[in-house]
Structure formats: C-alpha cells, structure tokens
Picture 1 (cartoon, rainbow, N blue to C red):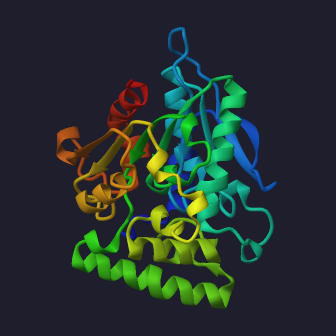
Picture 2: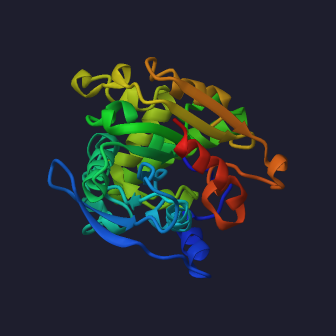
Length: 309
C-alpha cells in the first residue's frame, strides 16, 4: 500500500528521472510460467571488484513502475551488482492492451511474476542465487514464490503486511475508505481499479486492487491470499535471511505491520531496523522516498544489507 499523502507516484517517477537521467539499462524480456511476458531492464555492473557480488532483483511496490527505481538501480550497478528491474503484469511497460481487459490477480505477482524475473536474472548472469530487494509489495510475497530457495537474502524496504489494524485510527479510516469501499466499487463500474485518483500509484487491474484491500484488511497479506490454496503456501519453507527497513514516519510499514510480515517466515532469521529521518538529515522518509535522488543518503545502508552474509 502506498502513502496517499504523497503525490501521484507515476508522475513523480517521471519527474525524478527526467533531469540528469541515469542509464536506462538493457531491455530484458521476461516470460512467466503461464506465458505472460513482462518488461524488464537489466543494469550490468559497472564497478566493484572481482569476484562479482550476487545480482540484485528489485521488485517494486504496488502500482509503482520500474522507472521509479532506475536511478537507484544504476547506482547499485556502480557498486558492482548486476541489477534487474521489471513491471508486474498489468502495470507500467508490462501492461498489454486496455487495463480493463487485464485479468491479473495480486497473487499472480508473487507466484508468477517475481519468480520469472528472478529466473531471468539468474540466467542472464549465470548466478545460482540473487538478492531480492523488495519495496513494499515486492518483499511481501517471498512465501508464495516456488523458487524462493534461489533468493540468497531478502532486503525489504518499507515492507510490511499493510495490516489496517496496526495503523493510526485516522490513517486506518482512510485506508478502509479507499481500498475497501472506493476501489472495489469503482473497479466494478470502470473495469479497473482507479488507484491513481487516490494517490496510490498507477491504476491497477480490477482484481489486483480488490485483492490488495482484502489482504491488508485481513492481516498476513500473502498468507491470507493463499489460505484457500495450501499448495501455493511456502511460508514455512523459507530459510533465506531477511532484513527489513522501515521509517518511523511510515504509517503503513509500522512496527505492528512489520512484525506481522516477519512472523510469516518462522524459519527465517530476520532483522528489523527502523530509520529516524533526522538521523540522516531528512525531514521525512515515509513509504516511498527511499529511492528518490533526494534520499540517496539512505542508499549505502541498503547496499550494505544487500552484501551481508
């Protein structure tokens, strides 16, 4: 879930990368198990020493296009990592055809899209494992990935279950209104989830928007999503170490919702670190600002977590 206090994510992604733009990366076609094709961008390492550290897959937040992470991906490549960004089915460059005709579900992103992107990165680099750097939703679905054993480490940024119950009352009321009332009703009328009008990133496929609200209301996030599909539930099997970063001014990834996420991987060694904006000379970090050029003071901490053993 993105923070509605921020302006439109798609628009700011364009603005953030328009000036002094970093390299675009190389186009990489990603084919999912069900035949769906996703648009990826590969950033080959341009710095660092040998041997090369593990490659990094950046999995974005809900409704946030991969372009938003382009500057950070290029910086991470300068630190010596091969990096892949991509768009989930139904958003960004992976949207094929009218949005109202897209039948994607939120579970497809974790069960099909992230695994396919991970495999594509490993094939491209020849590595056996990669680091999954997930922003919000990108870190929430490790337990439904059939190839979770190929994730050497999960670094979650602003990652939590987005559980409404853990939010401040005023923010919880906004979240309920937007994701449990406005989005489902509008999706049934328009044929897609008009989340851009609510300041929640790009518009989403109808089913993705509806699932998003249900999962956040129920708690557990992907654990709730697979409750009727035990054959897809791999949460108890996850052994990759997990590092979660969240900010003290993030209404979504708060201590309660972060704890709810970490509890879903009982077999994983987990570390949680909360960032205080003033400690980094920042007025705010929130849910989205980690990857903006204005907040690059935070990036070395993310890189350090990526390299940890």
